[in-house]
Each structure stands twice: as C-alpha cells, then as structure tokens.
Image (tube, rainbow, N blue to C red):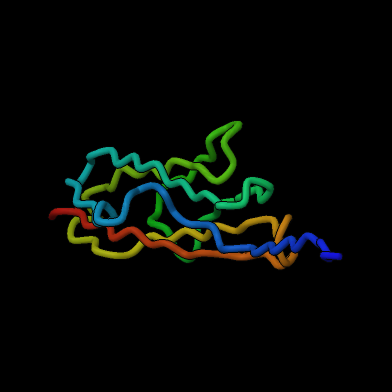
Length: 119
C-alpha cells in the first residue's frame, strides 16, 4: 500500500527593488530642479509585508515620503540648492520583509541611487 504525505517547503527570500528599475538608478539633475523618484520594494511571498526606510546620509532638504496604502513604496524628493552644485553621491534605502510565511527570519535588501547635480 503506497504511503502518501505532503511536503510544504517554504523559503523567505529577501525583498527586491522594483523601482527605479536597474539601469535607471543614476540620476543627473540641475541645481534648483525638483527631483522626484518613486522607490518600491516587493517580496515574492505575498504574506510578507515590506517596509522601506532611508539608509545612511541623505542630502539636506531631501525627503522620503511613504505612499499611503502601499507598503514598501515611497517617493524620494529633493530640490538641490546652488550649494549642491557638483554633488555626486549615493542615496540609499533598505527594504525589510516581516519574515512571515518562511523561516521567520526578517530579510533585508539595500539599494542605492547615484545622484549627480550639475554645477
């Protein structure tokens, strides 16, 4: 008589950044020009809520505004003053999942944008 059983394999992969797309993560702007960039991270496991936060130093006067009702999504905004002419640095974000549905361990991913301000 055959023996039947169910194997339920769960993994908890780290979130991935969907926006901005790879290849679109270097941003060049002029002084006093408004920069608005949607940053979004998603998780393959629909049970995992994703949170997004700035990581490291962000330029003075910039803001990261979460998108209401859309976890893991925010808009980075900045209007560089003339004193930022020649600015060329990374602006980074970390996405974390809740660890639900997999191993239970929270997974994180870091993504950086290169922001260049013409002088």
